[in-house]
Length: 628
Image (cartoon, rainbow, N blue to C red):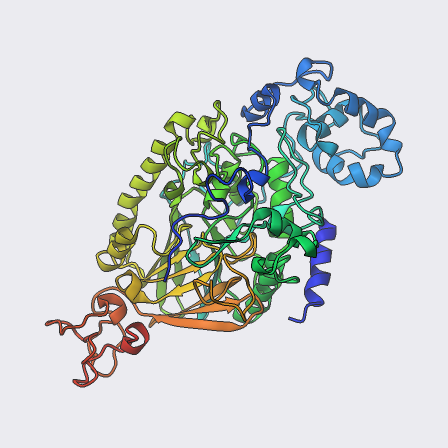
C-alpha cells in the first residue's frame, strides 16, 4: 500500500498538467442485466449461508479449521502453511497482509495465523467462515488488532469526549455538534468541496463471497480505478454508451468502444487522480481549512463488507479501501491534516442494498486524523477570530430519496427487494433492522433532519450557514428554498450527479447551490471532451469547488480537473439587513436573499426588478444574480 503512494507521487509529478436528472442513471430498468449495477456483485446474494451468518455478527464465534464452517478455506490454509509460503511468489502474495493482520512474518506464521489471514483477507478469495480460537498474537477474531486509535488533541491523559472514544453504535452522535474549529489568520480563508470521488479498489481481497472490484483490464492496479457508468443524452432518453461498450473503452478495446461513448483516454481512465492533483496544487496556494465531502466515497457499494463491525474496530476491508482510495490520493501541503467533513452517498449505504459497511465509514472518524463523519448527520462550527466571522456547517443525509418501497425501482433503491438478501439487517449498527423496515427507517431519518435543520439554523449566531448533502440541487426544492428564505441558509453544497454545476440563485428561490459530483470515482454524466458540450448539464464534467470565505461574502469558484477556473459566483449573507451595502443599497439586502422579481416590492432596502437600474435602487448583487 505504501508503494501505491510512491506511485501516485511519481504519476503526479509527471503530469502536464436546465434539465435535471432526478435519478441516478448508472442503470436503466428492464435492460436485461446489461448495466453498470448488474455487472458487479449481487451484494450479499452470492454469499453462502455460513459466510453470511458468520460475517454479519458483531462478535464472530471462533472455530477450528476442521469445523464445517471453514470448509471453504481448509485445503488452501493447509497448503499455504506448509508449501505455499515457500513459493517464489509467496512474498508478494502474503507478506504485507500477514504482518498487518497477524503481526508475524509469513515464513514463521503458525497454521492458526494462516487461518486468521484467510478469515480476514483471503488471498485468492477462499475465505474462512470463522476465525481461529488461538493465534500467535491474540485477539484472533479481530482482524486489525494491531491498529490503534490515534490520540487526538484534547484526548491526552485519559481525557474523554466524543472525539476521543468511538460510540457504541454508528447513529449515537446523530444531530450532535462536532467540537468547534478555530482558524487563525486574517484571511481570506478557503474550503474545498468535492463529491463522488472514490473509485474502485481493484487490489482488495474480497470477503463474504463478494466479487472482486477489478472489472476491466488494468483494474487490478494499486490505487483507485474509475467505475464505468452507462451514458445517455442530455434528456436521458437515448443511450449513448452501454456498460459493455464502456468496459471495452476502459479495457483498451477500440473496436468495441464507439465514438458515442465520448471516452477520453488519459482523462476518463484516471479522473480521480487528475482531480486530486489539481486539488493538491491549489491547496498548496490556498491552504483550505477543510474539505466539504458530499459523499459517494467508495464505488461501487461503499465499504465492501456487511455492516455490524464494532465501532471500536476497523475491518481489514475498510482499512484497505481507505488506504488505497483516500489516504494514498489526497495528500501534500495544504491537504495533509485538513478535516474532511463528510456525509454518506447512496453508494456508501450500498447502492442497491442497505447492509454494506456504511458504519465503518463513520467508525473511521476515530482512526483518522482528518476524516470527520461522526454520524450520518451532524454540525460543525468554525470560528475565524482574526477575520472577525464564524461559520456553521450542517452535514445532512438525504439518501431517503433513493430508499423506496422494496418492490419499487430495484436498480435505484437502497431498500431493493431484488438485491437485498432476505436476512439483511443492520440492527447491531443502529440501522434498518430488516428489508421490511428499510424504507420507513430512511424516511424517519429524513423527517428527523427536516425538523433538526431549521431549528439549528434558527439558533445559529454564525455569520454564515452552509448545508452539505449528497442529493443534488433541484431535489427537495421546497424544503431547501424554505431553509434559505425562512431560516437563513446561505449556501447548499451537493453531489450525486456526476458533473460540476454552479446554479444561479434564481433557480432555487435565491439560494446559491452547486453540484460537485465530478470527483472522478465514476465516469462523468457526459463526455469530458470540452469540444462536445451538447449533453452537458453544467460547466464541467470532472472537478471540485473552492469557496473563499470573508465576513462580507463567499466567492464560489468551479475548478476543472486540469486546475482551470471556469465559473464563479458571489454569495451574500441571507439574514435580513446583512447584505452588502452599495449603490442604492445603503442599509443591506440582496437579490440572493430576495429572489428576482419583475415588480417593485415596497419596504425592501433594495430592488431586484428589471427597472431598478433606472431608479438607482438595485441591490449590489443584482447583475450577478438576476441576469436577464
